[in-house]
Length: 128
Image (cartoon, rainbow, N blue to C red):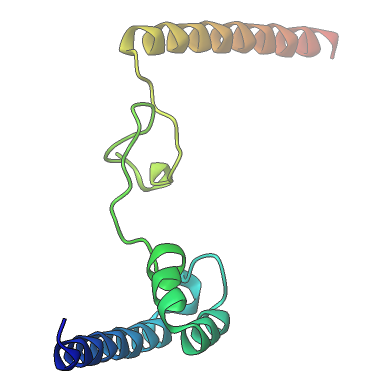
């Protein structure tokens, strides 16, 4: 291979690495501290400054914020009906029949508790 071609290729790679290094430094500096993953922002700046190629790869793999939309599992609600349900990880019924059976049990238990409370109130009224 021609020596001049090798020098041009090395020069091109050096310019590309320098541009990627500057881009990564700016990206680290502009990322809000709360969104940086795995290490704090200052540590990432030092890593990118002193370990150019490893720092660039490390930042994009381990440090850069992950802005991809989170996949919603089957047991979570896709679109919340009410703001209080707008929490990641909130479980939702997968089987509507089982959900209805559970709600029937809850209603029956609430009715039993309500009757017991009313009987207790009547007894207390009679004792007075």
